[in-house]
Length: 528
Image (tube, rainbow, N blue to C red; front, side, top):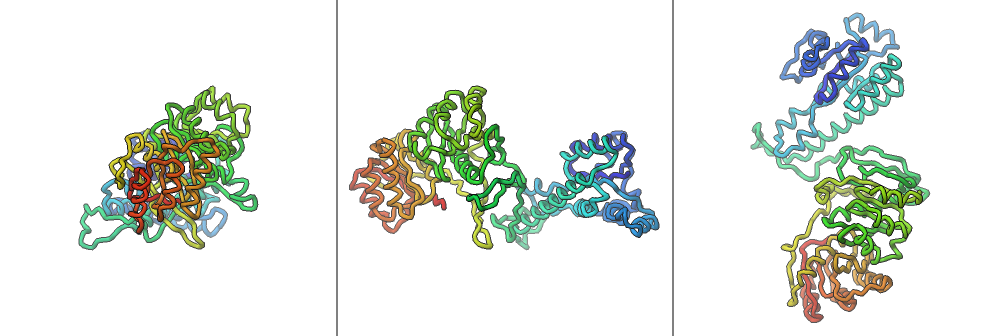
């Protein structure tokens, strides 16, 4: 049995090769890999010895040869193939171990030159991988160090690899090639080419939207059904896992997540990550129905729940701090579908032990969790896609422009920043009343901003919350003064809105007339 090893990432390759050698497998290799194996005392034959042709063009040409590809592609069950190998003195290659030049890592580096990117486009590696994967019945192709243990386990136990393992390795190999070629296409399609700047140190300007967008995702699980029971669904994640994202979470207990659970959980998780202080977000049907910050998780939850206890029933709850026993005891008093947090104490886990249907999700948060955001988001439209940069704008106090005679107090300014963060995650038209780091009324998803303002007031009244002295965030401008009048009538004393309406002055005059403060943010947060 012959194995050809040629890897860019040399993690674990020496140990793997040593195990292959122990099993009596002949080792062939190229360049740096061959040198590394030889230095480890392993008997290794260089591919150049087999092809009788030296590596050339700075290593660009070394495996593109019939003695390599013939050994990979020949079908062992076709006599003519085997006769051809014998005629030309070609040995079969039964195991190929290849990972590719680090193109993705190279172009991800700041200041990557076009020359560096091009040089890190692998040619021979993908060609060998495709040859081996095509001939999967006879050749095993290993493209990741994580696959070494499974390959060794079967070889050590059975002296050969099963069809199932070889086929699985081939599928993974073709997926890897697709991802690799897609990354090259995405990069080159985004280059804003400039003829007069093609020096070796040329760092091209890049478009956020390449001429061809190649997106790859890995299936995490099949779901019982989709948004409705007659629809089918599955959950996928990006090829590269993003720390602190929902897809990296571990379900500790409870029923299988549904399509709607995942969609709502993502809304809650992304919202709670936007707060630095201990925070709790309760989501129902993709909208935050209660958000609050507090000194600890229990206080944050208690305040968030007060906003809309009715909608919180059967909701999704997210914390940005470890849930302790006190918070768990309080949460367990209501019906909750999914509870997410960076962690749970032993006492908290014990509280939910008897509530076997409650889905507990533990999602580790990196230190910079507030900055972990997707760069691009997509929306399916008919037979096409809409792509846009994500709404990652973070409002600062310095961004606020006071446009009224009355000035906001320092406390109101802090509440405005809080309300603005919440409004970003509420479906348009969004109106959010807040006070003391707590939502007091949320109006979401209405065709009229006026109706959203009325609904927010109605919900606050139903929850027996006073809106006197609250601040209000409106995700887009007030087109007329009537919306402002509704929130002021409800008790708001300070309003944040983007500004930019033809009737801005009319609304500003109304605010001055009513004796409330108003600030313009300069940005809006439409969420459809």
